[in-house]
Amino acid sequence: MTDDKNLLAQPGQSESGHIDIYADGSYDAAKEKGGWAFVALHNGQTLATQSGSFAAKTNNALELIAALKAAEWATTHAPSLKVTIWSDSTHVVEGCKHWRPIWKNNGWKRYNPNPKARNRTIPDAALWKLLDAKLAENPLLTVAWCKGHQGVSGNELADELAGAACARG
Image 1 (tube, one colour):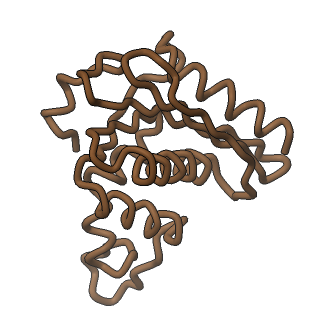
Image 2 (tube, rainbow, N blue to C red):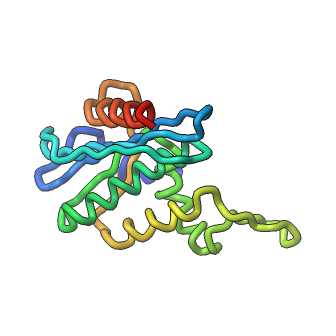
């Protein structure tokens, strides 16, 4: 499900007083470890970059930790500004926009309409809970999708930093 308001938003076209943060993850399945990174931009100028490595079972976890770190930075350094976290991960974007309230309402478990079936905890529930808290803390913080590997400079830099953090392990 897509929020129609964000169909009009384009990565890199920010208004004054608005910060764009590009978050990305990189994963090495053989090592079960990866890298995450984000790049914060205001009017095309880099405000901050961060990256690191994280042990995980899936690429989705690295994409999620990148969004979480971006949200933590925004909440600390830009609490009164509109901030968009751009992610090329549909898992993160759809999770934030559509599934997060449902998961939260269901005790961070997947909904199953069959009353006899077990409702299983969602993968990376601990990370989702942390991200949920940051998004709830700052109503000016939104998450939006940008297509990866399409020349969007912030996304390309976040991808490069995440890849380097993954390689450093």
